[in-house]
Amino acid sequence: MTILAVETSCDETAIAILRDGELLASEVASQIALHAATGGVVPEVAARDHLRTLRPTLNAALEKAGVALGEVDAFAATHGPGLATSLMIGLSVAKGLAVGFGKPFLGVNHMEGHLLSPFFKRGGVRPAVGLIVSGGHTMLVDIESVGSYRLLGQTQDDAAGEAFDKVGKLLGLPYPGGPNVNRIARDGNTTAFDFPRSMIHSDDFAFSFSGLKTSVRYLLPKLAEVPLADVCASFQEAIVDVLVTKTLRAAQKTVRRVVAVSGGVSCNTRLREKLTAACAQRGLELFLAEPSLCTDNAAMIGYVASLRLALGDTSPLTVEIDPNLRLVA
Ligand code: KG4
Ligand code: ZN
Image (cartoon, rainbow, N blue to C red):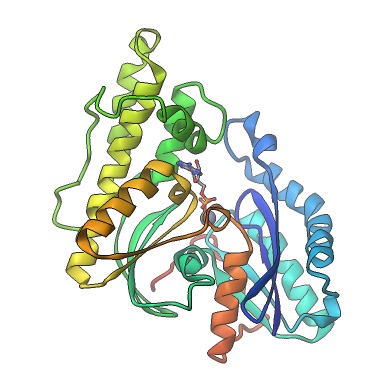
């Protein structure tokens, strides 16, 4: 079974080709350089770039995989959540290919792609507590099996990645802030500033990161006098502490023995380090998505498509984009 997956929900144009659980190609054309000038994604600019890069990215994936379009058994694409004009391009291309080659089509939820990405090449999906930490979302999900999810809690304001990006911008770092804050924090003191850990003790699985960003803003007048690495390390530690504490509590409450962590922020080295130590201490199995599967990619979309096809599931061609598509109804 050969699956071709397309992901264009935000600012990466991505194509992946999977065959029987093997990843033959995963091409990602990043728009980071394009959006650096504006310090964030301008939807119109992102959509135009998807149009420009989709075809070369598709050709590169086919060439790398050594697969011809006629050999593909099913086409899949992200249909939400994301930017409407970006989603439309990938979805239209995948549907067009499915119609043209007379093959099944699957619309995939981007969040399900992230959620299940830690299980790729690890023997399949297992009951687990899933933490998704990306630029647009921060959520804890109880995973029973493929397609059976319960939302435990999510952020009430900024997503973790959004907090990293906004603080990076406040500190004058290049876009996107997350990887740059992470890099600079390596030489910093994590206890130099006692930033708030909002909702860390609340008896639920909700998150709030906007107060933390405001605390960093209060420091700005003094920025020239304090080491930037200390600000980055202390800020990062506050986010990581909240994420780790709440994830472990979710595992305890749901009595799951596996913790599955995904999304762009799960590339963060401090988060990986602290989760690894905390899970080892509690005897929990930790599944971290491979770094190449953490940030947006089409391999995770193809993986979900393969799991759903195995369950006999396909989507009608009437499936539309849904910028607000939810993971759990
Ligand atoms: O999953 P993703 O590629 O896109 C969304 O679906 O949102 O996540 C992108 C986010 C950005 O906010 C980026 O700053 C953050 O992931 N990110 C990081 C790191 N690498 C990427 N945040 C913290 N530390 C990192 N190393
Ligand atoms: Zn994403």
